[in-house]
Picture 1: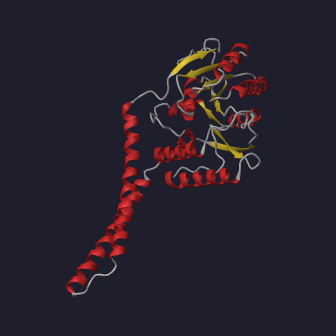
Picture 2: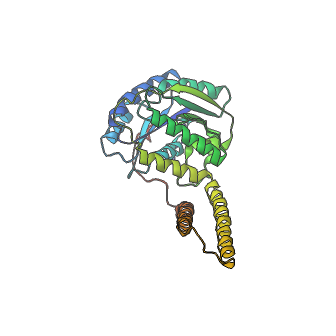
Picture 3: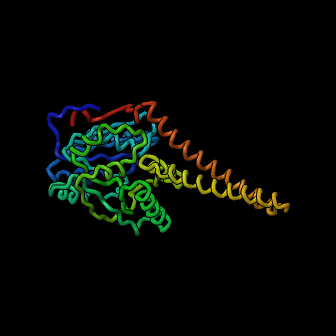
Length: 316
């Protein structure tokens, strides 16, 4: 979405939304209050193929609030691609991304901007969510970030989120990236630009329900790992080497018993070992297939999203 830069704002706020109709008005009210105190800015609301009245709510807010605009996907392309669309459309010298359910408090934007003005090009946030997330959610989130950090070599602390500020220079550095399944959280961390982290207390969702089921979180974790690490392939090589050594040892034992004229015991255990070997083989083929699938998606060079409608773009 190319836009004129004649009046480039200092600050842009990008908010992806999917079936968040009840949250749009209160979110925009708080954002307008915060931006007014900071001297103004633009807000880009991205409707990720909602099936409720989210788009109508965005149109209404864009019509009554200067600097607020929106774009709507042709279908649901996913949270990360909605963020990407907003980032590519944003014109601010600094761009803040946040969720639209008010769990990311707009008031924290003041702290993000202050840290940016002190010289940091990226301002991350760390979520404190003991009051709004259950033990299982917190435990699995912490496990994911620890595993991702170990596999990718990109350090990410538990509680990381897409609530952050990035400088225009960071966005320009990331512009050549063409990974259709980009994990933006890891991608921004990967750049290595000067950064700081601000803690915030997550609020309860204002309305609607979370869109991240367990299955969707698992797919998200898998996609993030494939985007930044080839270690699963290397693990497969070592597993293959170990199982091959065990297999050759078993063959040597069978041959030795045969030459000595003894009956080879343990055929049940041998069958078990063979079954285990085939199970490992199929797992490794699955890992290889996942990486090939990612390469296939990139080589197709399809656009990461399709925009069907916009509102307020010419006025902001």
